[in-house]
Image (cartoon, rainbow, N blue to C red; front, side, top):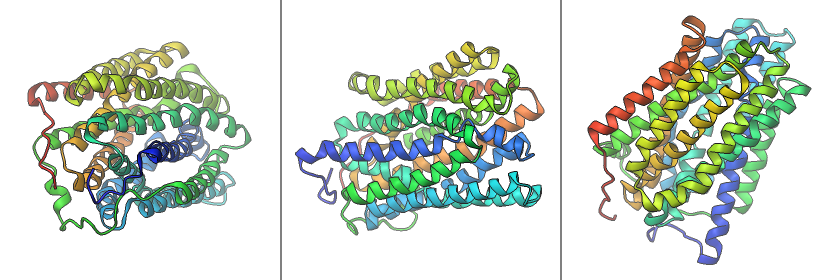
Length: 413
């Protein structure tokens, strides 16, 4: 931490982290309620699996482009206004998506126009909501010294994990009242979260203290940082390929109806989130004290890869749920370890920039993963997306073994 960060007094530091944790948790809850309904909603709208993949690709393409911009902007104008703006954008885009989907269910919009407007709503959401994650990561870095950085990133990961615990189950319950009800819920929750952040979060970055020259954010992408960013992008590609196809996979393999699918998928993803949050909120802190991020990263790749291969062979509820639990453990180790490695590789004036680069890497994975996953599911086999994802994770393990990336602490300033 430096003079340009507005760190609260020690008595308020814990509260500031808690408020940031709650903000990210509520935002993730709003996003994850959609996981179990995207598949059945798309089929009710007459859209194919590949078209469904474009919803996430459009959203993530804009995140890829705009995350570094918002990360650098938070260095200049402060973290808080950028975070609040991202949450409002999230809410507006989900509200628009819900309205368009409702019109499609009522037969008001033709399939081509319907698909175009739904993708347009996702483009808008990606542009605006891409401000949220890099800014939250940078705020947590502002509030934390270097020795506790991995644990702090684990706290953000736990907020995401808890959102995934409650969100899918809640989405399954809300879907009983209509497949677009969870989307409207997410839009409303986004506005509540924006209000919570606006009223309770303190600014952690003094505006105008660091205005990097244009292009500086990409100058950071060199050496071990490049390797960490590649791992972030490709492990996300593997994970999102699973997330985008799991509702189709469960419905088709367990022979469920459209009404049954959200509840069953929601229960599986709730277990996935519970395991992930338990690891990120409990195990990462003691592990990070004993092991460096570069030692935890290959461990996460091994566990997550094993879960993907197991999922490709699963055919009943419990083997699917157990495979998702393994994937959740691996993801819970990988996410905060990569964030910590990147954060520790730059100085305190570059936290927003490197967080933005990481968000772009994550967005690149989210952009390509849905198209690959749904394309393989539709054109090759129902098992192909998970075999492919497992192969990607094995390839990343080989990259880590060959490159041996290390965190190199930069000079201050």
